[in-house]
Image (tube, rainbow, N blue to C red):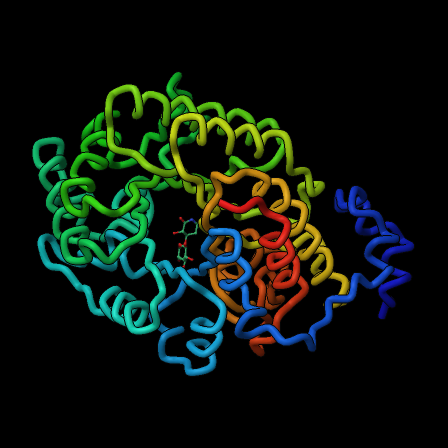
Length: 379
Ligand code: XIL
């Protein structure tokens, strides 16, 4: 068994592209102070609120059956989003037949506890129901899309802080000059599916902030740079055509092996969105730690926390960013453990990507997130 010091000496972290953080910084315990009071005025939501921001997380239907989860959720967060319950497949399991059970439960819970709700999502190429392919045609696709949005958006009208109207519409590798993904909705309706979705969403719930949500646009890699450019071009086209659009969601599924290179591109993205009059939310933050999964837990937690710190400090330089949500609350329930790439490389190993561990103890990422709120400019 390697000690943490041996591990760092071997330069494994540097090999994973984490040299920027400096082994010294990791060795010199940055006092994660895990025994500090974290509730009440020391909670994430209060620290976020001080600067005019919301702190949120994704919640599954199962999470709401868990008393410990609910206690931490209400103590720490001012915003929730359904991890899956509002997606097309779960919510419309048969044509024209809707199942709102899980989504209703989340919205009711949030109302009781004075927590705001994000809607996620109306349009996505994934999690479409099995009936979709055989039933939706070029002839009826616009009607299916608008009826879905009017029904789901209408049910929660006035109760949703922001709706992810379209999720992940850009895929540069699909080869189109406009960068649009050749998704089922695109193939059926053409590029105008976006404008139709946003106009219908505004009609369904005029007070919800209508959001475009995208991943892979956070770091300094070439692929992120290209995807950022295509995303901004899409947002500009939507704005120019008078499409109702209020916010950009930056998913923020980041990882501990990108060299922790966040900064210039992220700032430019946030500033460009702000210049278009958009709010910005970090909608699905988590740090995939596959690259350091062989290290001690304490080292992994610190690596993850440093990535949180680096990323959030860059993103929160701007007043435009007014919500930070993590994709899940505890390491005990993270979608990353189910990812194919993780299961192939690290079968049976658990990721530690979130601000609370599986026992609901705050991890160093919790403190990194709270500190980042404290360094952010007031809105
Ligand atoms: C994920 C959920 O966490 C999983 O439970 C589900 O199996 C697949 O979807 N980007 C998104 C989210 O916008 O909706 C995805 O959520 C994660 C990636």
